Image (cartoon, rainbow, N blue to C red; front, side, top):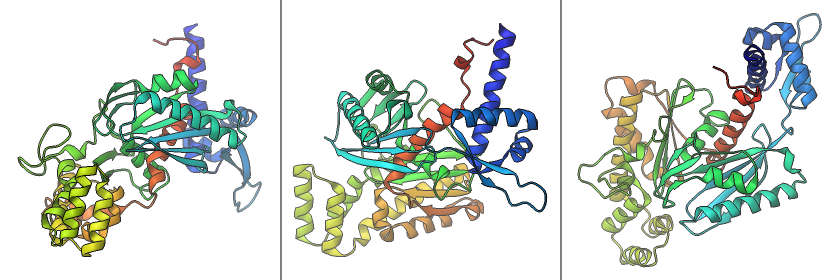
Length: 408
């Protein structure tokens, strides 16, 4: 029985290796599959036939040939399954349905209370999925899975949100709750990890293998790719927002002082704008914001509209971001750094200066090999990476459960 199980496992591995190659290349011939995978032409042909019979792979045309028979190109059938992606934000939930190529089929945003409870998330996800799927006339069995992106420390293996300061969640088994309610395989990941995966899949980072992603806004997040793989260890890696940039600085939500998030969040920037403001109107707006607990982002926008520029406040912001970038460059020496998040709205006030501070203060010549860039995918990136994770884990990751045996 063990020998049979091993044979079935090898068949499963080969099936998924070929499927991944087709997915990654977009279009590829059987001959190229045999060459790049090292599998025999007969094995490739047999597996591709099975994939076509299942409907997951299609023939899509011919390669250009200098002579002889033109090789037939293969591609993933994007309509084989759909994927439901969810991003839980502060006061909203972003929802999308895509095909297997990540093409957006339907999207929606649900406004929620800022610290929404897990039980409400589960009901909202279940109701939205059912409504959106029906509007596309998609049967339930077409759903490949659900990808959920959430702020905080996430254990993706257990599907548990260990700690989310933003949502005030602690040890929430959100995957289990959703799977029990919806009945669909669910994958949970940190939202900045999702953002970075989307950039590596469909965004400007797709041609790089060593990259760092930093998001600036209400909080500060980070994700790290080393040799093409998202670096992850015990669910807490990439916490760039909690590196110390100011000794004995502002109190952070994590309990420490002087963290990048405490010094470069919208709350910190709004406080500096108030401190350096020259007009009574901006002072009054700040006091009103604090009294009503309204959005710091809206305050920053309005303050800039009133005063036109906030040089002193943004000078401090630029320096803090520059120090953080320098630390990232010195530690990881990445090829590529991409900056995203809502604070890009104000990039003309700080980003050029931040990058210059990084370049001037980085160790040796290490910074000369770094490309700095900004996000152009916007809100979609935050959820599209979770979609990719569903596709990757469901279609390309080998599961011994397919054999019905526990292999030793």
